[in-house]
Image 1: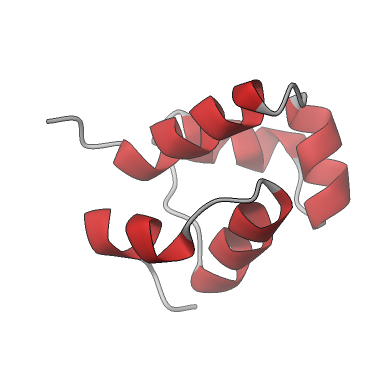
Image 2: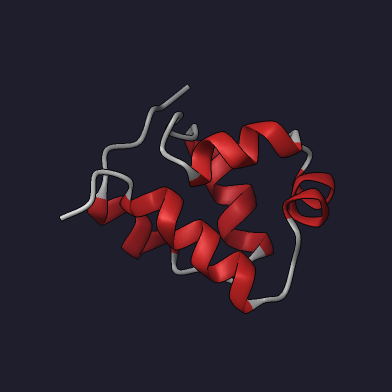
Length: 73
């Protein structure tokens, strides 16, 4: 099982929605490079960032919270 379940799920949904990293980053108020880092497993997003991404990409936040540990800062 992959260690980067959350990043992979975000990337998959972003591609499904036909959005670029830049579009998602601008709409959620994070940098494109930070989004890339999340998608590639270099960083785990905070709960606030995860909520922004999940809301924008219409993702099931409950699923994301159950598959990985999330930082609470």
